[in-house]
Length: 525
Image (cartoon, rainbow, N blue to C red; front, side, top):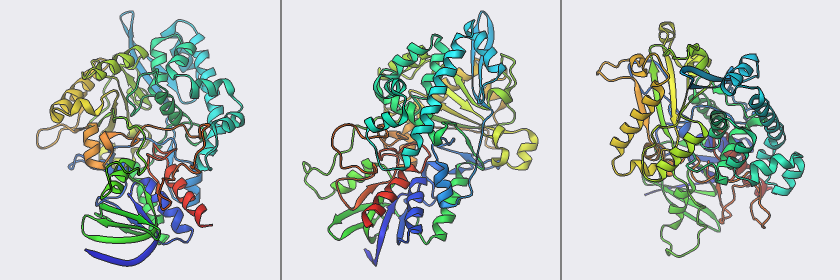
């Protein structure tokens, strides 16, 4: 064991985007900061990799879009990072009266969108309901988003400040499924709305956990727009690393923490390599379940160390693909339009609820709900000039209601089945089967990789593959007394949560890292 003598103001465990954000804020405030990352590469879920080595294509392997990252964090830290608008919000193919059609929703409402609603529903009533609903949400997002970087407020206070009591009740107090059924009539339209309540969350539409997921997907940065990270997710990590190093953060890679002690004089951590470090405070930017295991070491099993909240299983299948060309669609729509936004498949309201029921019974859903998007239609920079010239593109597929339990018995077989059902679901709307356009690899395989929730647990330490670490909280305090000020505090005054499992964590936002840093700085003032 090598005991390092320096006593840091703060030790940050976890070098994902939240850990880097926290370290940057603290270092810029004059604190001495040590960041420990278990892997060789920083970034966690926000890495860019070349999954197909013979092709110069850097894909965002895990997280792939940005909604919640506040402009304030970008400005505060001085990071050179841009996100790009997608001209299309979504396209949902369907078959009606023997014809292949699609519901097109532009990012900015236009005549094509209005006509698309009429073709699906037969009138303009559903389009009017859509515009009214999302207009209200836009107002809520604008008023609520600033609070994400402020000390926690009570539900009552925020409800008054936002000034939208009816919408507040609909999104915070009544299951989102009830509101969707009340506001919309068409099954496909209802499903497109519901998907934002289910990404990474294995629940029925009648569970308030779906409301929390929906809220986090719709209030990002005051507008809720899902944007493409220019240069891929790795571009964000690269910039955060630049700022961290320039601010004096000491970073040690391949330093997995295996032991943690906390007392009146601060904290002490030991790494797998046999190094020990001391600090006044610790910011934990990995999963809180891992923190609890570390804190429980050497304690009585019944000793209260602050049990974590209920933890849901991860429920998403992630498939990354490189294609020689975009596949043509049976509907005849230009694939450069269809895949520019979120491409929904088997995601009507009834299909989503049936898929949840099947998965709850231990069955791989059939049909499998999924959505797809093409990063390179908005940002071709993640491909080499040669691949762009040849017409190559990346496709990212996200499967819903595939909880970790479905993969436990035989992970490889279950992942293969999930991939098979995902591609079959996609192919039902394509003239060119997706397999026919996948880039070939020299070993005879195709350029496609699938990641199950178990892969996410193994690769980047997400418990049961849960991209939120555990169930999401609403971004406010309930009416009961609380010791929380920033949503980062634990029952140990020297330990703070700085990752997705913190209150107001989740998503590629940096909010949890910011708030943990603010909580520590507030204590030292």
